[in-house]
Image (cartoon, rainbow, N blue to C red; front, side):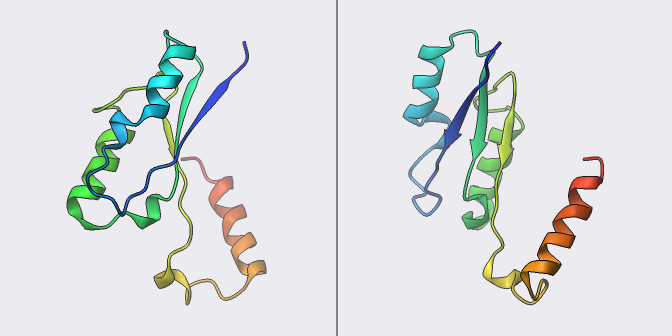
Length: 104
């Protein structure tokens, strides 16, 4: 079976946009009605502000709003407040290796 990745690009600065109703999910359902090959990739999650926005993301990822059989993955970038924690690219790579060696 071939996998299909659905990339969900959500503009978090627009609070009026509901991620669970975005057109990309409707198109994915048309292509794979059983949902066997749909994987949600939530990008720019680091830009979520406010309690309401964060709860919306949590509800989606936990499958409360728009459940997907393969679930969702959340991609975040380092934020401006993370700048002092990792001083250079080498340290960031070492940190990433440690994270990915641990069981989730």
